Image 1: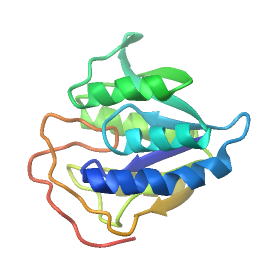
Image 2: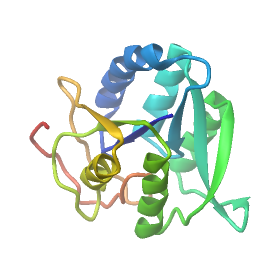
Image 3: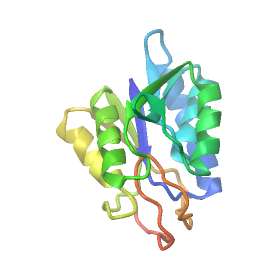
Length: 182
């Protein structure tokens, strides 16, 4: 399996660049028995899902659950989850609270551990209260998971929406642009 993690605050043009950059990488991995794995959420997971579909790679979407029943997501993650479900061949329910940062990070860590490879959409910035990408990259590497860092030329961070709760971090109103590359 191939998982994706990444910054939760990327601009729409960056997500379009990312989708185009991911497609050939995923086409190389599109073989029987291989799949891409994402936690349902807006931004990077949707770009990955679209690229996987176009590349012919099976997609598996992880939905949060409470007591075996899908847990509610906030907008725009709910809309993104709907698109990911349409793109997916499989869905997995995983017990975690999408409103709790520690719970989401634990779910992302479990996803990373279950994969042979992680594609990290990361500019090299450290983890903080709004973004756990650096943590997940370090976590994957510490567990022997192959990590490929992707940061498309021209990629930018945008402003974030407080109502959105992505799989790889927590969105808050004050997360602005960050310079740098890995």
